[in-house]
Length: 305
Image 1 (cartoon, helix red, strand yellow):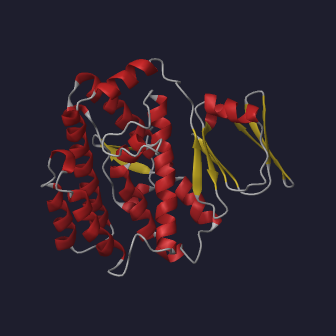
Image 2 (tube, rainbow, N blue to C red; image 1 turned 90 degrees about the vertical axis):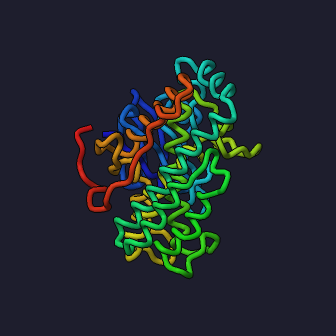
């Protein structure tokens, strides 16, 4: 079982004999480095050395640094830990625009279908989630008619109410932003592990964004966060509590459906990214495999993985 460690006060982090040692006034906690999935550092008074950082990243652990409001702002990722990084990046660069657009079309279709499933699973009336599902049927190559935005304009009010706006500074948006950042970091970590250059996206092309590709690949996974926020709304108050943040950080350990099999989200992300490698190598869009949302009451279930 891979673990996520949250550093929420002035702890000191050290490495000894391949164990991460977290020391505080309450005592010491030891975790094998090989068991770590991520380390989230929320408190700016936490102390760790460059040696600790490099040991963790070399082991495949991604480190997330948060701002004063506990929102993730920085992700550390290993460089070129894939056995053939040049080959992967070369193929990534050589993709034709048509092929990129076809991949993006498939990603947007699954995102909208997952949004429809989210509405269905949280109890929104049938005609509304069917309306969102129908939008997915009209996504063109490259989503040139921007069905993604059309779906979003209807989806969020259906899910959170007619007064909801993604631009508002409220607890719902804080929870969404936090959860999206966690999913983004998991996707970015996996892409780096397979040798991708994160700045080279399929659809996102910002020159100042080192995570363009992660922002593309994570799109169908956003409804995971949306469903959690909707179902946990009674436990959300003016600001995100430690327990809220802990649960959002643990989202990659929850369950999703991949190829008709239930598995942890982090494993599904790995299969998703691995299938992207295959799709690019063989120039076949149909090889791209994308996770599908499951009902919330199955979300925290058990698997055999």
